[in-house]
Image 1 (tube, one colour):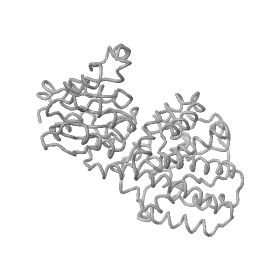
Image 2 (cartoon, one colour; image 1 turned 180 degrees about the vertical axis):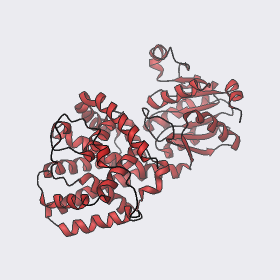
Image 3 (tube, rainbow, N blue to C red; image 1 turned 90 degrees about the vertical axis):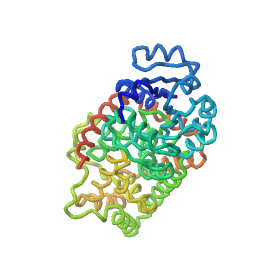
Image 4 (cartoon, rainbow, N blue to C red; image 1 turned 135 degrees about the vertical axis):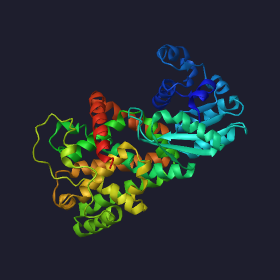
Length: 433
């Protein structure tokens, strides 16, 4: 397909100029495509001024974008996709292609089928990474729900400037895999942040959380809270597969913590070793670990001098591996569609479970050491809190809980983001093997 010829005749429209919509608008226009975009109509004049030096053009609303664009991408919050497609869908250009960039495709596809003209083709996308991550070699899912082969090749041509790894899936496959690779991961790190918030404790200011594993936990948790709440709420609340997994994570945390409190050492060990065998049993003796502690040590927010670590059950990691076991998920099966954060968290979990002596020490500390019990209790409460919010399907409550914790961490987020970006860059280079 001759991209240069297409660029002379085709227009790409972006409805929604949030972080990911803006990323797409910039990359496509810089690659030579004619790009138009819009954000909220009431902020039109401010948006025009804000992006006056960009190569893409700002239009007044989604009607204007839809009428002139050959490929329209809705880059809006999952909670609002139905309302916005209902509003702008009827203005779609005759014979155009329409797609979305939401993290859950079931409500997106339903909205497209309900409110787009029948002559419109539907080819959606999803970049499995955040807006601050280099798109090169990151997973990019393309979903050809209702499009010709020619239109699919056109969408691939548009996306080629991202230099991502393209994976073609159905909407159903996408939602199952994104839930498998993101739901439990997000629940774990959201729960960590809330637990620290409730205890009014910045973990990098104490000697409790030192070491490579703790660095990864802190950096990834703060990275999540540096983003917008709806990025995670959309996946958690609108994806039925995610519901099940977040419920299971809270259940695993609660049950493992109960075994710790009851001192049931053998029962705890038996359960965790079964989970280890299920998730990591396929790895051979010569398997090279994805990550190692010396590498993770480089990325610390702490100003404390390095010292002896406090005994730690690593309940958050024990529970995520137990969740995968209970749900029948082997995370390595989905590496081609994994996010940068998921790959790092899998690497940290693998490091704890597969490094000689580390898992045994964590299980021993879980039963015998009391220093982390108050923290594990707060973490358990936080995990159950997120589970309840998701089960209620309450976006407002999700936003309130997320943003109150975000505000608590706000003074540290710029530095954490910078360090987190560097950590992800270095660790993902390590993970390419």
